[in-house]
Length: 218
Image (cartoon, rainbow, N blue to C red; front, top):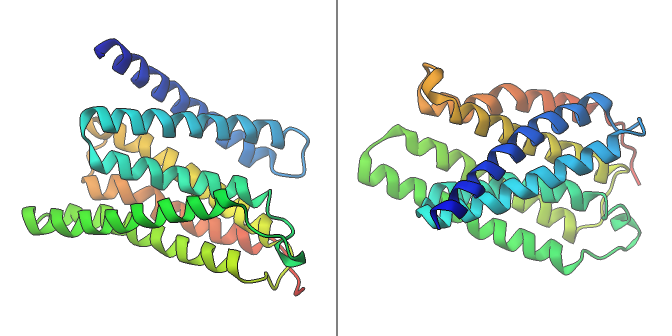
């Protein structure tokens, strides 16, 4: 079992490196170049591998927070991927069962993160409880917004492109955060800064990128 665990860690790390590289390339190449799609596909495969190995490792070691974070990060990845399959919601397209399953699992997970944060703070009186609380609250907000989008006919064009860009960049923030946290021993900053810092810096960039997508009323 120890050998399998070691192999899983190795695959997890290699996939993480791949995600950082292919994610950066996908951002640089952007959607209007022919190489964006295959590069983005490799990024999706890397993130999927990270998710599978992350779940495996968290279950083996009983790390509940890692389990939650694996789902949190992959949620953005899968939503970005599904956005490319949901381009006709404004024309009466119905979400697939997988879309509802994803939202249900994510919703339960993010509520669990919030409960975990509250319990952790009560037990330890540690402000690091803000880490799972922030992830859980932000994730739950995303589930609510995505569910509304699936239930309500979109009122603007290119809604799917904004979903794709926003969530792919969001998942890339997750990959960067994982890298930063794993280098914690070399970075003299509090854990809360390492966990939330990348999002605090990069989320405004996502907002700027989404504003560049010129949508029109349907």
